[in-house]
Image 1 (cartoon, chains in turn green, blue):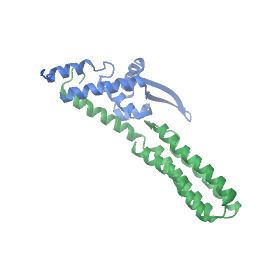
Image 2 (cartoon, helix red, strand yellow):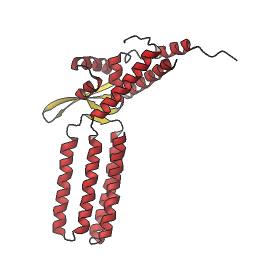
Image 3 (cartoon, one colour):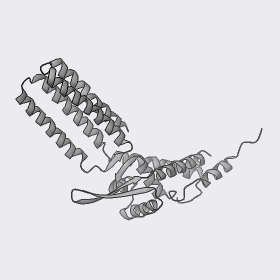
Length: 143
Length: 107
């Protein structure tokens, strides 16, 4: 089918072929970026819930180390060797990371300075800080 | 009231708007697949379009010469890799080509 004068049927077949190729390549990416954002959201939520139950600095530092280690493992497992980047991923990714970064920074500064022993604060923060990542993962998964 | 254009004239106009570079089914599939991505690795495109390495290389060379596809070479660890992406000109050409095909399909 290499005619430069396609019939309506040939045009429909070409259109179906293009949609199939686009869908196949999109699926080949295995949604790794969405998986990474989901993993980071889960780790972040657990980190903050953990902080709500640990008033001492020593165990909190161990928890922090575990959080950072989980981020590293996620990155190595899911981002290294990504073969497909879906259209618009950069925009969605930056939005999610920026939202998480701002919430994470503000919540840690406020929490560690004034509300270290407030369980309610850390539980609320766990939702607020996780939300941008969860939304980002959902948007990336749908893209 | 002037007569409506017949389906033949709609089809003829649309055929004139078909892009010669990407009209080949292989190149059209490659461009359409890349349109769904910001960037994709060579092997992933090959598998998605279901063609051989050499067929994809030929298609990419032609598309790169037309400035529709950009090629980036890099490494994952020690393994060399090639990534493909659609240029803005390539996206425009694909969009116009698909519009023409839809006009023909509907004619």
